[in-house]
Image (tube, rainbow, N blue to C red; front, side, top):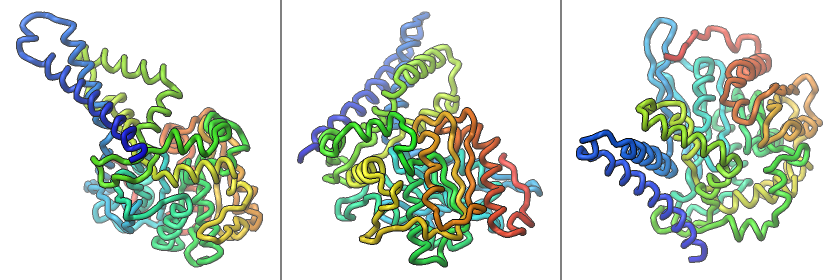
Length: 423
């Protein structure tokens, strides 16, 4: 039962704050409270509405909500998701656009397992759908996975990626974002050695910690300053009886969220204060900018303890990927085995999570890959989020990535593609 009480205490605090918000909103909504002008009730109702919504979102997996696509002939095509490969700790999803024929470009987005759901890449998916068939790794919340399913660490993550790549075949273009960048690189190298026929055509690495020591950030400084014993003692908890994964040791999403918020506490405090003011004045809406952002940002998931601890120990502390010493299932992965897969690195100049240089280190490991198959791009003024989902991604990086894919897919990859616009 060790740590289970702590896990349940955090859930109790979340549940209590959600209840307080709902109670305040309901109390201030009584008709008798409207008999006369009472600004205090307006503020109480606004506080309750924002509080209830915020704490409820923390245990709700967001929907993809991909907009309808409109074909050149004016017909609307509804976007649905289908599971291509179903696994205990994560699925490979495909976004199917109505009855649209398969696109020449087939892109597999490797989503981070770093506290948020794969829906964090929703805007990335939306931006790519007009030009490609898009697949994404949809990782499951560890609290919902029974202990009987066993462990899941960075080696298992790498093996999952290999299975997904083999399922999609050699015409796939892999885009890895943030945390999975070094593991996507390792999975590609492992495939190159064991199953070269299943290698993807291109591998685009976006803002990930291939070599955390290349350029220090708060994240890397934290990883170097704490011991593994301290991390295990302070960060790992046991899932309570409320969830199917009862007894599983996890790094809780709520704890990760607290860490995220503490890094920019004043910014988040001001954002919620301003939203309460807008609600009280009747200026807010269901899908305003605040709700669109925080509905996703506050929705967090638990990671298995072994995945979190092995990431810190082997990627950040041991730098196994950076030193080409990574071992998967007893086999040493050699990055030099990548000889035909074109690799592009994308970094943001102002990225404070994976600073410039950390991801670029990947190209130095690819000693067997010709220089003409290596590419890199540093986006001026872009932060971490902007390089895969913000304005920098939409206006600058996305076109470069698609050009890179086309340049390494043969001359006719984009031929016969119908123009599709978002509706």
